[in-house]
Structure formats: structure tokens, C-alpha cells
Length: 187
Ligand SMILES: *[C@@H]1O[C@H](CO)[C@@H](O)[C@H](O)[C@H]1NC(C)=O
Image 1 (spheres, rainbow, N blue to C red):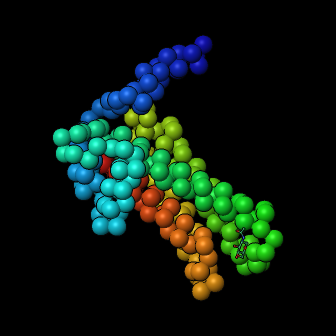
Image 2: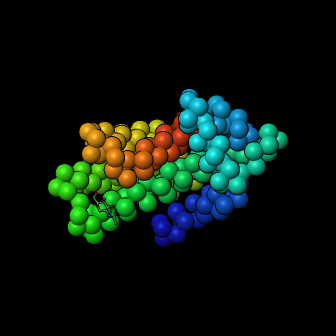
């Protein structure tokens, strides 16, 4: 009975995700203005615009969406690419017999970082944002970023810098930073 009641309460919110979210107090803005206000560096701003375009968002100033919708879009992009990299790490660990002992230790440690990062990002994407629950999301974003930074910082020395995984980790880290930047606009 409790579950049915909960579903009834959540149902209107869930439906609104695919159509229009209506989180109390969250502003409506154009995509470019949102990227501009949210992003602190040109690198992240450019990534923001690119992600909006890939998400087929109309960039004209007259088209306005609730900031939550933009936050969800950039966060799903971060989750998707982080998940893909974690699969790549798993593949290398399980299927690639030619990785060195050093690489094995390194990929294993990074996989732990990735599992932690995905837990935080996924929770924010699936549970928090679609239901307009914003309390604590900042900590979730920051803990995901810390995990991805921890993996990135394992790349010490020329052997690791030349790893094909290095650019993937950097890209995931930037996407998570973008998600955090737009998530801050909800607080
Ligand atoms: C397996 O690991 C080696 C050493 O890191 C790498 O050069 C090679 O590209 C990897 N193979 C695959 C299929 O990813």
C-alpha cells in the first residue's frame, strides 16, 4: 500500500520529465545563457554548447527551458561517457592478456574510482534531478569529480600519459565538471 501511494505521489513528477519539468523556483533560460552563467572556463563553456547541440537543444535566445532540463542533459552525457570508459577498463582487465602488471594495477584502481563516480552521478541523474530533489546534489557532484580526478591523477609518468585511456578519463572528468557547473545553477 505504501508503495502504491509513493508511486501515485511520484507519478506526476516522473511524467513531467519527458515533457516539462516544473521544479519550484528554478529559472527558465536559453541554452547559451545557461552555459554562459554556469561555466567558469572557455573549455567547459564550449563543451556545454557542444553538448546542447548534440542533445538537439534549440540554441536561439527565444527558446527557453527550465534549467533542470539542461542539468539533466549534461549529466546524462557525463554518465554515458563515464559508463563507457568503465566498460573499457573492465574489458582491458578481463580480456587483454598483454597489459603490463603496472597497467593492471592502474586500471584496477581507476575502475574503483569509476564505480564510485558512477554511483554518485547516476543517483543524481535518476533519483534527484527528475524529482526536483536538489538537497545534497552538490556533494554528489563533488564526490564524483573527486573520484574522476583521483583516476586522472594516477596517470603519472610517460607510460601512462601515452595510454589510450588517458584522453577518455580527461573527457569524462570535463563532462562531470560541466554537469556540476550547471547543477550549481539549481541551488
Ligand atoms: C591491450 O593492451 C596493450 C598494452 O596496453 C595495448 O597496447 C593494446 O591496445 C590492448 N589491446 C586492446 C584490444 O585494447
